[in-house]
Image (cartoon, rainbow, N blue to C red):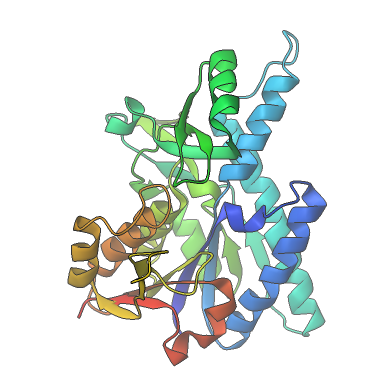
Length: 311
């Protein structure tokens, strides 16, 4: 039995239906695969993205804003989406376990992640959040709100905010304790609420942590053996969507770093996943990272997906 940190993307939760019922339905399907994996004897900590969800929440906050009902800031919105998505995952997994007569509690934790105040991303926002917009829609929204919008991997324009590098999971000791009790933990949702330390005080900041880098820090902080990053494809590829595309199966950290340097992975898409995986694996010899689709979870022992190892 090994301890796995599984990172589930926010875009995978919000496919086409942005209602809570629509997203609950997607998570209910995901819970089947996760429960299969856990039933096979694996310990799991789940974290998830929240880009589309927190972006939509920010739009709702702005649309309803009045002097007496001011919009909440980004750190509060990240915490709100941690709570809502955490509840959806907690509820879906609990129900799936009950249907299988598996006695295993699930708990979700609103998680803070310490970042450095001097992180350069505060001067150069780059993290995309919210829905995809056309170039014209993005220009109008930028003019209306003063926000920054950038093109995202050929899929449209999205709002960008600071994305500091996560340094530490504040609640790491609690997470470890709960996992060792036999429960499934949902935490670090949306990369966790980014906080900076001022003396003895932690202060939330207007930023969004990258979910994959936070998952890497989480996996390190709880001494996990494996980091699993779920995405929309079975493997990572070089020359993706080109006639000569090649699926990567088992690669060393050195090979993965070479592909990164050669620019094979898109900055707003696969690059942070591969970088997070490599960084985690480099920490200790016995670690491995897997990037694949959720459908492949129970087939990891068969070598499906892309596995990154030390050697």
